[in-house]
Each structure stands twice: as structure tokens, then as C-alpha cells.
View 1 (cartoon, rainbow, N blue to C red):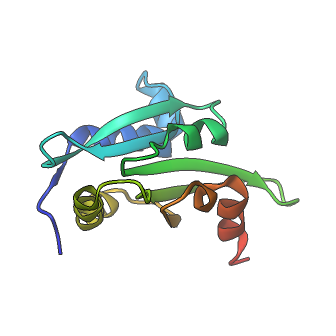
View 2: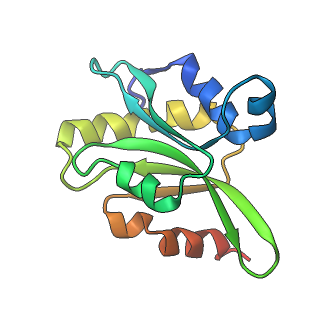
Length: 146
């Protein structure tokens, strides 16, 4: 069931700065490492909640996830499994156990509006606890299909 929320156009332009760092630099934007998205206060529109420039590590991303509120995020996950540096764009649906039930329901029903707007996502993670977004758990999920 769709919730009827819209996606703020700033979400797409911010995502493009993450997805295409070279284009971001050319247009005067800083290349991004991750973007957090949330619903606005009226629960009618998906907006950019927070960004972090390239150079931020995974721990700073995990610390940015609120303990009691839902979020969506895209992280440029870089890794090296002995075959050289690689990266994957990972989409996160963060719905912590301590979030309010109504918030969880609205976020769950609104996810597809955002997810469909973001082309190029390679991995999707749904998490309710910090151990599910731990770097090792995500790396294992990314490399599982190899």
C-alpha cells in the first residue's frame, strides 16, 4: 500500500551528487559519502535529512542513524576483497525497534516512492537494530553473491 507521499526534488539532486562525484565537482557541489532521508513533519513529503561529504567513514554514518526514529539512507560503500577497490550504492531502510508504530507504518508504506526515484542502487538493507547495519554485516551481504 502506498502512502501517497511525494519526493522532494532536492532528494534526487542530492542523490545524484552522491552517485556521480565527478558531476558533483563540475557543478560546484561537494561529492557525498552518504545521504539520510526522512519524512517532513506533516508526513507528506520525503526530504533530505542529512548529508556527509566524501571522507566520512562508515562509523559516522551508523552514528547518524537515530535510535528511535526511522530513516532511509544511501551510502557509497567502498571495499577491497583482494581484487582492488570497489564500491556499491547501498540503500538502507532504517526502522529501529524503539520507533513509534505509526512512524514505522508510514515509513514502510512510503519507501517505494523514494526507492523508485533512485536509480543505480545495487544493494538494499532493511534494518531494525544496529547490528544489522554493522559494517561487517553489510560487507558480507554485498559480497555474498560473488
